[in-house]
Length: 339
Image 1 (cartoon, rainbow, N blue to C red):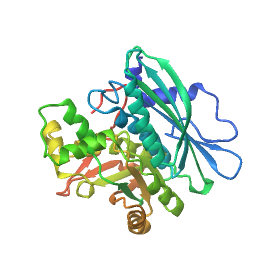
Image 2: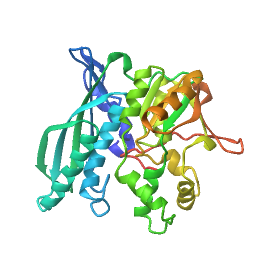
Image 3: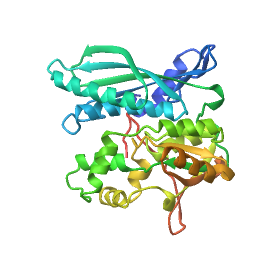
Image 4: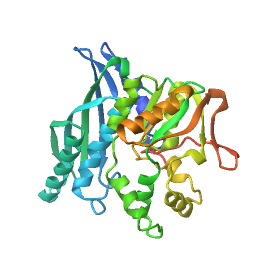
C-alpha cells in the first residue's frame, strides 16, 4: 500500500497508532486540528501547525507575497478559533529556493506581520532551510483557553441545529477561476472569490464568543469542505446529519460557476474547502438566539443550515423541492483523488 491508497486521514491514524498513548497534560492529541495541553495557571495551551507548499496550496504567479503570508498564518489562526481559543505565539519555518528574490521574503513577512497584528499574535521564531521544490511555509501556532470553554468536535447530539458563519464555496470558486480559463463570472464576484481564496478571515472573535456562551456542543473550521468537516463532526460524535440546500449561505454566482464546472450548483459549497468559516452545533432551542448574538457582537452573519440526526439515519441533503439525496461526506484529502 502506498500513501495515495491509504489517504491523508488513514495516514494520520497510522501515525497515531505508532506513537505511545498521550501522557499527563495532554487532553487532546493527534486526531484533531489542534492539540489541547494542560499547563499551570488555570488556562489550557492550544497548539496547532499547518504547511503551505508552492504548487499545492499556492502559486507565486497568482498571489502576492503579502497575501501568501497572510493566508499561511490565517489558516492556523482559524484552527485556534475553531476551539474558541486565543492565539498567542507563532513560529514560522521556511523552505526556500536559493534563487528566490529577497523581495518575496519582504512581502511574505509584511503579510505575516499584518495578519499577526490583527489577531494580537506575536511571531516569536522559526527556522529556515533550503528547498529544491519551491517555497514551503510551515507555521506552528500556540494559543490558550479556559478549560470550561474548550469546544471539540465530538459532542454533537441528535436534535442539535447545524450553524455556519459567513458564506461558503467562495474560496473554491476562486481556485477554479485561476485554473480553468473557460469559466466566467460577473465582474463583481470574481474579486470576491479571489479575496476569499487568497485572504481568508479566521473567525477568532466569533469563536471566542461562541465558546464563552458554553451552549455550542461541537465546532470545527471549514478547511476540507463543508461535507468533509461535517463528516469529521459526525464521525467523532457518532451521529448523522441533514443539510438543507435552501439554507446554505452561497452566492448565486458561486452556484452558477459550480454548474458550469461540475454540472452541480452546490459542488463548491459542499465540497470546495478553504473557506475557514466556523461550522458548529447548538441545541435547537438556543440556536436562533446564539446566531443573532454572534452577529450582533462580531458583525459576522450566521446561518442555520441543518440538524444533527441519530447515526442510523446517515447524512442527508434536502433539495429545494424537498427531494432528499445522500450527502457524500467528501472533502480535500492530500493523498486521494479529490473532488
